[in-house]
Image (cartoon, helix red, strand yellow):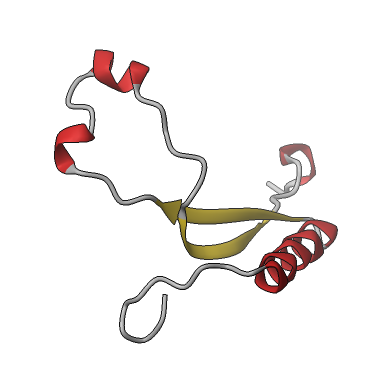
Length: 81
């Protein structure tokens, strides 16, 4: 998204940039998390458990908001008392 709020499609160069960043995070023992959304009309959002169970989430044309990493916690058996 640019400064005016307009969506900017990811070109192949940017896709490779983000893939490399994710690989680098994983190599550093970090969990990588990406947050994205797809615009939808309010009436298409499930309002009960049955509708939610049948809802198919979009996998394409998502708007990437953020990529971040979380440090892995040590095994509990190695934690000090």
